[in-house]
Image (tube, rainbow, N blue to C red):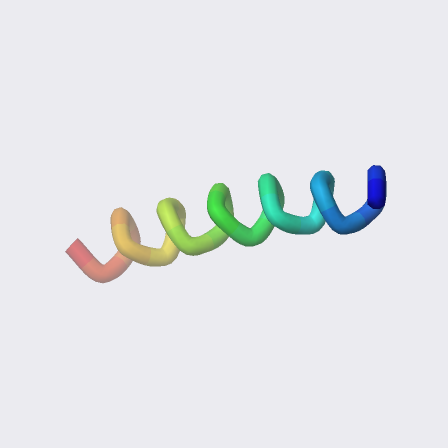
Length: 23
């Protein structure tokens, strides 16, 4: 569960960075 939670956080951060890059 810990890994899943960490993965979720990383996924969200990556998505945010991707959006910023697109902007």
